[in-house]
Image 1 (cartoon, one colour):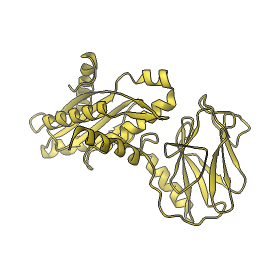
Image 2 (cartoon, rainbow, N blue to C red):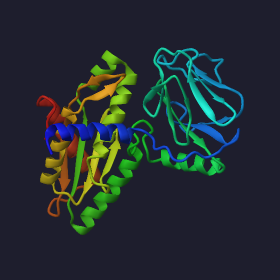
Image 3 (spheres, rainbow, N blue to C red):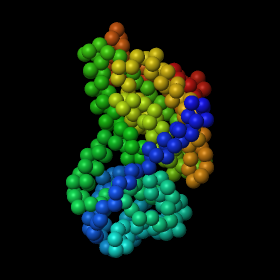
Image 4 (tube, rainbow, N blue to C red):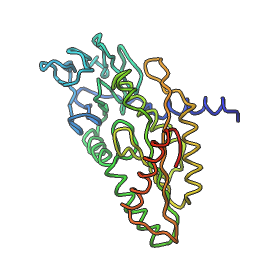
Length: 301
């Protein structure tokens, strides 16, 4: 496969991974749907939907007030149209997004993700909405709402578990800590909405490039970690280098504008002859990430 074919495949992976999967339509009636905040200040908040229109905006008179400079005073409205729920943008400055696609008006489907400013809602509908809501709350305990990879809490639990297993059975375990170079420049030049879009696409690309048993997590603002069980350090270095090259060749997109980025990687590992504690392993990888950035960024140490 040529580099251009690989780049095309990776771009397609970003689009398909970041979007929610829409299943077959389920007939619903008013009151059998809700929004759940999966990323934002009121994480986990449930907003029931009925027959009355619900407006989102920066105005305190909005049914869903959002204190965010990226949100217009009257930003978007969700309403029942007799057969389902529809979201409509109210000529907002920064747009309304459903599954990372800007929309003017669109019917909502179960599991759709709505992004208004920096807040992300998940639309849930169906006859067993109570169960679906509690399942979503449970998922939020382990998943980062913005990037859809493991959150820091889930990563720390996995790190403890995998280090204990590697030491007990004298197996390899590699940890890669990495971040986006000069990420603040993206936020400063293009705004936090562009930065959020890059983070989502970045995480989707990394998650699609590793094994199912590997743990990809967002552990800071633009910092991520990859936990790779039974992988020796040299193999982890090769994997990190492949990720570095893929990321540097992939144009990330926001509002039809390509944003080119690079990443720096720090790699550390446990081997049968060098057991480490979880704290020691993380500090080692993090120190090597710092070395990569000190050496000029866009490299693996």
